Length: 312
Image 1: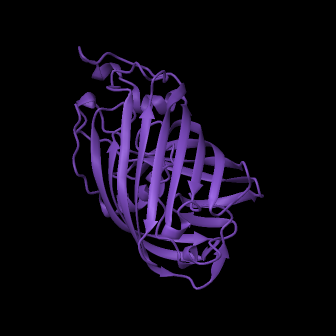
Image 2 (image 1 turned 60 degrees about the horizontal axis):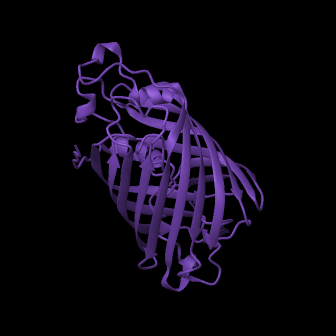
Image 3 (image 1 turned 120 degrees about the vertical axis):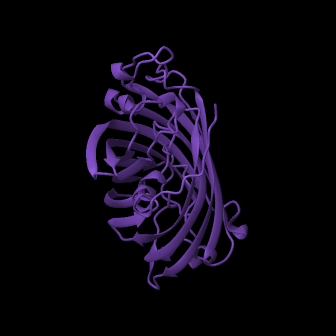
C-alpha cells in the first residue's frame, strides 16, 4: 500500500539533513546513487557569459523543494518533504561547501579527483505499517572518501565521470543527540552532466546510473526483524551484506533570471537480487524518488573562481 504524507521537519533537523540527503542516492531509497539529486542552485551570472567556467567564490542561496521520498529501498510507503531553507556555497581550492555538504579536496588533476563524500537518509517514524510495533529509524548520516574519474578530462559544459565511494553510516537521534555507528555503504556511479546542448536556453540536464553495496550492519539497520518483533505476517530476519541494488536518475534545471532557477529530478531504484531482498520489511522491488526545486540566489561574492568541471 502506498501511503504518503506531507511532513515539515524541525528547523534544526532540516539544516543538518539537507547537507546529507541532497547529495543523492543510497541503499535506502532516500536519495543516494545520486547523485541524480536535485539540480544545482541558481546559476551564477558567469553561466550566461563567455566563460562559464567561472563562478562566485561564495553564494548565499534560498533553496525550496518539494520531494517524494520512499521510507527506504523496498518500502511501499513514502513521505512528502517540503524544504524551504537557506544554504551557503563556498568554492575554495581545497575546501568547498555546496549541495553535498562540507568537503575537502585531497587530490585533483585533469582526469581524477579525490574528496570526502556525504550522504543521508531522513528518519522513518511510526507511520510505516511494515514496521508497526518496531522502533523508529533515526536519521542516518554517511561520510567517507570518494574518487572521481573524468573519462575525457574536466569540461565545465559537458562532464562524464565515474565516482567510487565508501562511507561509514551513523544513526543520529535528535531527541538525545546520540550518534551510533551502523555499518558501511559503498557504490559506483556513472554521472553525466551537460550544459552545452541547450546553452543558449540556459538549460542543464544530467543522468546518473548507480550500483550499491552494503555490509550486514547497514542492511540490518533497515531490514532486520528481531525476535521481539516477530508476528505471524513478519518472521524474524537477519540481513546479510552484499549487493544492494541499482538506480537510474535524471535531472534538469533552467535558469529563469540572473538569480532564480528551477529544476526537476527523479530516480528509479531496483533491489532485485539484493542481499536483503527476502526481508519481510521489503514490500516491493522498485521505488521512485522525485521532486521539484526552486532556488533564489540572495547574495554572491564579487570575486570569481574557475570551476574545473560541472558541479554535482
